[in-house]
Length: 83
Image (tube, rainbow, N blue to C red):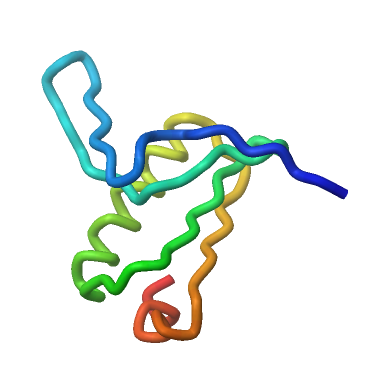
């Protein structure tokens, strides 16, 4: 079974609404089932990840996303508890 993915936002992108509020969200691609896939590969500070995850979840909820998959390699085990 293959899952088609399309970009949700450019890597490390900023989402601006109405030209006033810009929030940074985690890099993600849309999946074929109405959700998003976050595939992290680079080291990230846990506090920054927590902040980005909160703002990302709020934004994806506003967009009506049905699910979020977060892929973390073993090197990023420090982010698992936060996720």
